[in-house]
Image (cartoon, rainbow over all chains, first blue to last red; front, side, top):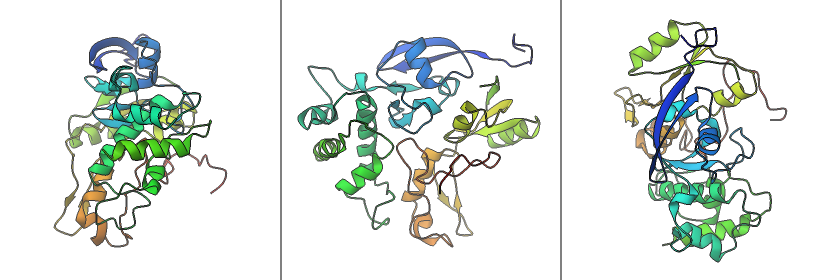
Length: 177
Length: 122
């Protein structure tokens, strides 16, 4: 029975690994994974854009899979392993996707970029695993790394600067390796 | 968002019992509709029963030709790699559930059963 009068057991302590570092926090069950990262753990690579799972700017890799953290409750992810865009590489040794975004100017203001990069890493893995998409012409065969596939698979990551053309080029480069 | 209790279901039977045993309890899967609607105040469940860690990590062809599914939207992507689901499910054209988007939501998000539609245009 919690302290809020209605019997809700609201406070929970969770431990998770963020970019290779073990972190813990005691949070209300209502706290999203995004707010846990940004407000409680000061991990600010994932950005809060829409907070409704529409813009993709809060995307991280959770257990290797891309996830919009604004639609996940922190309490669900006790013990999880999270990689943000910051954890993918360093300035000296960027991840191939990060390098490709630099090579192709795959951003302008950069707000959506951490989410784009994490989403791209997850997307390439999904493509390599053979998952078909809405635009895969023959779902019984392995999907190909076409611009149409990349655009479809990245369609949940919005860029209001409109860097899409360069983002697709960057992912083509990164996925081609 | 109104306060709620959270329980992670250890198995399918417990999940069903938890939701059946408490009015206002709902299952929490991918959350792409439910959490969004909770934020908007459209739904206010008293308890979330998390089924995302139930041990259903694969899609299997059943004896009757159908598919046994997984609770997480993200795992529904596995439908795309299950030959039986791709081609042999009656009524399915090509792949019934391939269009998993970046956030794990389906390409054409289903509306929550208990919530009014948010979309103003089709």
